[in-house]
Image (cartoon, rainbow, N blue to C red):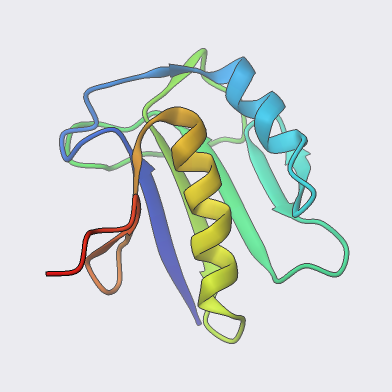
Length: 119
């Protein structure tokens, strides 16, 4: 089974970022390796993951043919439910921080990055 972390600027996916700097950042992360122009997988000895860089509509729907759009408004991590969730949260947090966006665990409906202050 898998679960998802979505990185976005806001609930309406209204802000875009240039793809090239993001892809360069992802390619430099030791946990990831490129598997296509806009898709990354896990590097050797890392938990299974697929990272998709894309452009979606305001409701978050997207289709990916593996090509890199010139600008993106979301990054999605497809995560394994048998690996440490903290690993995925740390990776998605670094990506979200790079973009100045937030990361959300879609299954649990909670914000992963930035961490929320204790209530």
